[in-house]
Length: 163
Image 1 (cartoon, rainbow, N blue to C red):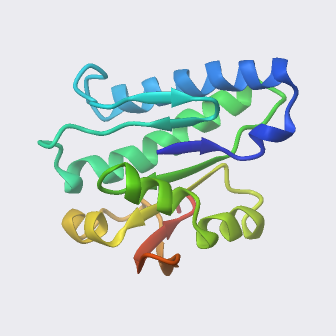
Image 2 (tube, one colour):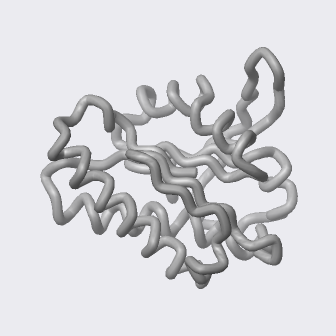
């Protein structure tokens, strides 16, 4: 799941532009990790939030590093073309409920404020992070955080960009 930071603060015309840019960035990310958008089930675009459910056959050890680097690279390319800088909160997990919980979590929202230089901030569920195993050097550091609400508390991993 990907959400644009500060979307609601933009004018209606700016929001339209942001939605188009977000669709383009997400399509580029999927292409970079060689996931056919037709196989990415449940793609849902609503305002400044995009949900992409990858195929069950997607290997986290291969897809996670590619998703992170593609997101950083695609967003940097987009931001170089426009004056209205986009920043993204992104969640990688299993299913819509977990994705919503992660993208709306306090640790991810606090990271947006703490790392103003970061264009893309990602929370990866503990399960996906464990399934991905040892990640390649140069991808950047993950910070362990606790995500919780009234119904759930668990570990997730925060990524704020490549090294």
